Image (tube, rainbow, N blue to C red; front, side, top):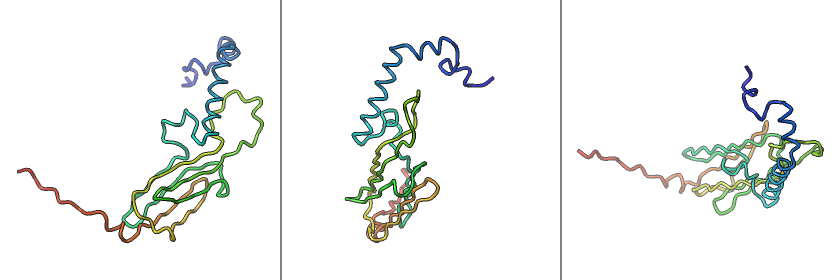
Length: 162
C-alpha cells in the first residue's frame, strides 16, 4: 500500500475534488498565498518557512582559524546571490525568480522571491581574505579569523568536587 493513499487529502475521490472547488477552501488558499507573497515582498521568508530558521538553509563550521558557511541555494547561480559582511554579520541575499506561468498552478510550495539571511559571526574576521565559492547549488563562504580572534578562546580547567 502506498503511504500517500492513507492521507485523505491526497486521494483523488469525488469528495476531494468537490472540496477543492469549495469557495471557502479557495478563499483560504488564496489568503495563504497573499500572506506568503506579502511576507516575501517585505524581505522575509514565507510564513511557512519561518519556524525552520529561514532560507537559505546553512551549516556553520567553526574551525580554529576560520568560519565556514555552507548555504544550499538550489536553482540559483552565483549572479542571483549577494554576499556582504558588515559589523560582524554575514548577509546572504538575492532573488529566486519564477520562470513559468502560474495561472494554472493549484499548489505552490517552492520558495520564490527575494530572500536575505543574516548570520552573526561572533569573531573578528580578516575581511580582506574572505572568499566565496559557488558550485552545484551550494555557496561556500570562508571567513578567516583575525589572530586576535583565534586567541580569544581560553581553556578553563574543570576541577572535581571531591
